[in-house]
Image (cartoon, rainbow, N blue to C red; front, side, top):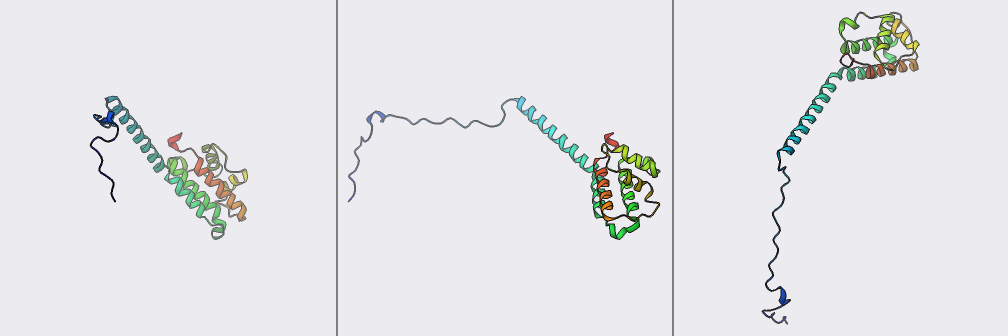
Length: 168
């Protein structure tokens, strides 16, 4: 059984001549004036400049990452009496990368530890550690593991926080 056919005039008679409203075309998201294009170019240029400066800073500080990795890899047991000399060597390499070779290579003893203290805003080395760095490379000294780890930690602090020649 099917439904009877609908008559010709079915529904609301007042809407018989109704025409559906057509939606306008979509509005473009592209900027319509030159000012927005200039602003976009300015923002792009500033972002590129910031990215370039970050990349240059990252590249300039590669010696810090290398020095910290080498300090972390030091073993207090295998080096024995040469431990302080090895720490001193790594600090000297990092300092020569940051400053001129002529300024750093000739430093030793109290001059060396004074230089280390002068270049870091915080003082990472205690007086005992500074004395070890000043004379420890020339006089064999057995360190216990706790003091050796403290010396490595202080050295890593100096490597991370010292002011390099480009920063003043």
